[in-house]
Amino acid sequence: MEIKRNQRKPLAGMTLSELREVTAHLGMPKFAATQLAQWIYGKRVTTFDEMLNISKANRDLLATEYVVGLKQPVDAQKSEDGTVKYLFDVGDGKAIESVYIPEEDRATLCISSQKGCRMNCYFCMTGRQGFHGNLTANEIINQVLSVPDSESLTNVVFMGMGEPLDNLDEVMKVIEILTEPWGLAWSPKRITVSTVGKKPELKTLVEKTSVHIAVSVHDAVHEERQSLMPLEKIYQIKDVMEMLSHYDFAHQRRLSVEYIMWNWFNDDIKHAEALREILPDEHVRVNLIRYHMIPDAPKLRTSSDERMAYFRDYLNGKGVTCTIRRSRGEDISAACGMLAGKVKEPGKTREKQVDGKVQRVKK
Ligand code: SF4
Image (cartoon, rainbow, N blue to C red; front, side, top):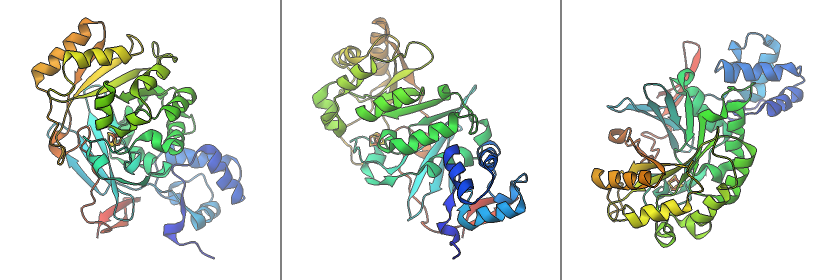
């Protein structure tokens, strides 16, 4: 019986061993799995017809049960500072966002790992949206492969919508695809995974990969942090940092701390000291982040430039590397904590072939 097109499985997002299962299942030669990986991850093709070293008979066979599964963003908004926010339709009227951040010497894509988030951080738009499911490895890697500047990306950060370690299996698959020679063959040093501190999954990630780690601390005082970030009630941030102190972040691998600054809330010397106390060693970098106001979080306001500079200088004076991170894309709600992934017209797009590539266009 013929499988409907929308029920055919996407190959993008599969690891090499999963692609081998596909070729074995279809009775294709084993080396065809490597060819598929090269076409999808190396050349970013979107149709089987473009895979010229695979026979026509085998391409037709693949198309009976599978699709390549790469989908263009349905919308893009460009900020005055060059940042671009892309919207990807992930079905059922839901959408997720990725943010492209060009800089002089690098181009970073901030990607999402979940539809919404269940961590419910008080200050975060995504958290306010609730949780609508994990993204598949296909939906995560699609963000990297389908943005217009895909080929020129130098870095990927898992700092978009969702808590990546709440979707560890799919995130690990994507890291494998990004770093293995049959995939994008990137150095793991081009990848950063951010977390609010899911301790057991973080331990697994640290031990099984060598990507950079960014921990969203935001407030090192336990009582205050748990009022902002409910996960603190389960995994205290001091215990998470203590666990990280047993791993090597002094050489190739980086551990950084993200710290959003709220006026007269977490931006005085007492808080700088509380933060310093939980840092494993002098190799940890602290990034201070300006707060971007969201609706329904009236008790928080961003710290002034002067207070941020004072906090930074205090930590620098104590030997902690601490910088104020430049905010990007605030005018298009693409800055930290502002991603919400609204679909403008849910379901109002369709696939279309444009210059031999499948694109989604408005109906
Ligand atoms: S800050 Fe991160 S973990 Fe917290 S709700 Fe937002 S997306 Fe989720």
